[in-house]
Image (cartoon, rainbow, N blue to C red; front, side):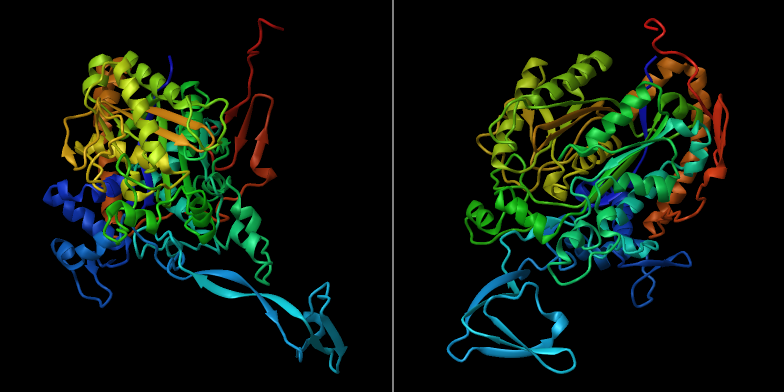
Length: 631
């Protein structure tokens, strides 16, 4: 039997807020929530944004005044809404109105020339031809310059790109643990991985002790690495700025670091470790590897994720020079009123002029169906499979091609084979890549329209999270998974509220691209679609909790399901306890720096198995020849 990968936990953070317990999803659809869910969302965001803290079980503001939960929205609602989702880039990243750069200046020093004194060791090497140096006392020199001098000096420029999907204002992951000069993306990785683990209702060790150490895997990556000064940003910039490159810049900047950090500082994993990058489909590429390992029985427990926190002047300028990002001039032309609305820069499937960059860390916890049943784990959904296909020969590496037709058609066909035509035709929806570029709105909608025609689907709902959180690059499809799980849980389909209408060139005859949030009936299937630069196409088939539980019951029987449901009560209590603590700002970050470090003496070997200190179970060594028919 092929194991079914079950999603039992999710965590992380993006511009909408915390991922666990659907806080980010709830922020997006805040006006459709009931009073209780709305209040809980505002409270959770207020503590995440450090507007409130919890003291002795009570919420207090910065002045120490107690604030009742029922009063949080009235007191901080406008500030919370303004400080989440896409908005003008905040100075924590850089000032978009005065972005620093080095401006070249050629000076003609005139007939008299110029002279200055300095320390001899500060002279450049080699000396410019126009410099004449005279030695002075105390290891100093006088420099006389004639002719022209070219210098670079600090300057600023008005950046034409001013909006991004940033973490909620005031959220400081570095302050939640001893972050040791770590880049922002790795700080968010620690937060996201811990959030996902706690959301299961179990500690990591409680789950891990149920399986062999080599049946656990971590699958994660970032696309850009870590572009801040603590990572590759410092490695590339420091010498040019007259500063030293640190011993950590290169290592902390590698795109494998999210996986390495989870293994080394969160879970202590000694099993499978995997990193794959596929541009905007990176989360799905890593999810595919985990799903395949679980289906094959190689892994029973996996943590899957991605991070990218690349809102830096260099990355923004790189995309901007490709004409990929929505800029001020383009937005003003679209709206025709001379004003760029920074809240509505990302407009999937509407009249648009480019995407909006975002930052995020997204993680999910997967386990096989038998382990989920044994633990009484909360079921958020399941992943039937992930398909990845390339585009073939092309002129432009960034142009779309046929690969996404293949991934979408395979995903829909698989879902039809498993749950039937009615579920796919009546109770499925798409979480679109929806990047918000003029080319994407045409090419992606055409794919959906043609696939819908092939499978006789009409009025197919399409949602697009990038309208709210921007394009987070590596974790982008993780944002889509989080939204899909939110739709399953709340039966609310997010509309693309940043557009006034669907663009005229969008192929929408068979699609339902709404511009307002709407109540939907219970959905069975979500298709997570990603179209990455370079032809990195991926589509995942996700099943709802109801479909997943029905599949588990059919495989394992009603008696086992009754036992499973008896176990879920305890799990739900633990999950609710963490949810309450997290909403109060107590995130219980896991950072095991040096805690339980293993040495050679912690490994016990035989020709049958391996024991490792701290792990409940042994690792069995291979004993069967898989190629017996060939040897």
